[in-house]
Image 1 (cartoon, helix red, strand yellow):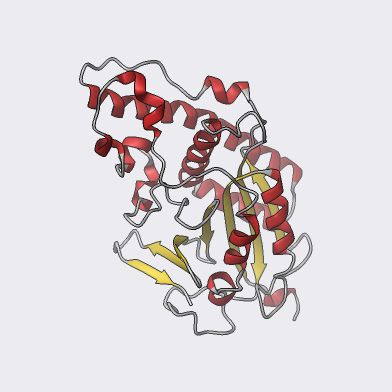
Image 2 (cartoon, rainbow, N blue to C red):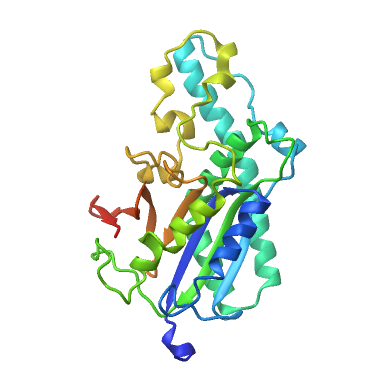
Length: 295
């Protein structure tokens, strides 16, 4: 095969990592180059890897952006909701500016076509990526690891491959497509999950920030549990808020990190289930149809 055979761009994004997990994923990725796997074009023309929106342990900047001024509201439940939205908005502002700074640095330091293609995708998906980094940053900053380890908001692996991902191949029967190496038991995503589960200790999924707002008085826990709009405010990525657990789009049950995948058409896939294989979910915005791909 020659370079002209690698016509398809694919992007894998891992949210909420530390340095050990980042290095582990990078190492595992190096085992999936072959034509019977991800079938990648090697070298600087075919692979672009970067980190986004990192923060140092005990970051004063993060501390200063965790909580907004107390909202003026008498009703306890409504005050809780408004405070959550205000806090999320303040932290999102920090992540938003960091995201732009990272992209500016990438643009200045990379002159490759694949780097340009990656930047174009990241700019289009900014709202989704920033919101997921914001959520992961909040969970890290409120954990006992905040003072102990650095935080990597997202790890982006952008590649050129000879393989195409097929939305209609829901059982990944095409042995020569991208579905199989992404979703199967021995595939790239599941391998990364099990390789990093002992390196990441933050529980991203299933927690509510109730403990952060005890000073607000009595309120119904049901009001905040499961209500994504209470937690992420007017997030433009709410169209990716499913009832299957991926409240913030990328964080799912069964994965120690957040994960999203963008296929050659730029369509966003998130993890719907982790079992013997990975099940990916895509919700088509135009027709509101959910598509599932597994093996």
